[in-house]
Image 1 (spheres, rainbow, N blue to C red):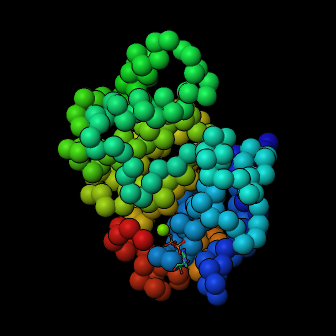
Image 2 (image 1 turned 90 degrees about the horizontal axis):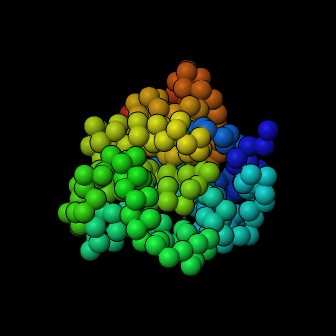
Length: 256
Ligand code: ADP
Ligand code: MG
């Protein structure tokens, strides 16, 4: 079976700084896969290359068997690679439901450009998505007054409007309280299970990673040093060295 995403020898240098070095991995269908590593390990740089925001110095990225090299981020997104942002990207002056409807309109435009009762349909679909992320009761509130955790769940609903096969989430829980963090990752895990999509995410909090990830990859100084199950990663001497040696394994969940 073809992997959803196949990354081959991916590398990125910024001047003399090697941010990502010869990274290889695959994401399988229905997998909730964590990419962890200390601050500056190269996680965001990897994400930005997968999404077409950064051009790799070397290497290739295949999505459902198709080479994405050189494609702009919008083309990659259209093929079904979604992402949520480290900084929430919603329109504060619109309601929760309107934000989702906007995303649905943008997604469906190319398919149903002349569909006559589009807005009504989108409202229903928006409400379905808001129910999925537990925000139906907030549908008509303005985003400006939403709690941070609710905004992050709205962002997830917006990302799902585009029906991604693969969702990239770079520190989706940054800035969240532990209970909100747990709730967002449990929600993400249930969406992965229900919809059969794949999610690649980064996360600082090890308890959250160990509780929810199906598999974990560890990046250190741009190199992938481990790739395995939760137990394999927990017991991996090199991983313990990187985290415990550097005092980082249980570092606080700051954005980085
Ligand atoms: P992480 O997300 O794991 O914290 P990053 O991918 O943000 O790590 O950064 C990896 C390394 O690349 C760091 O040394 C960082 O300073 C460097 N880096 C990231 N983006 C840039 C950039 N645009 N220009 C120069 N250096 C960068
Ligand atoms: Mg980062």
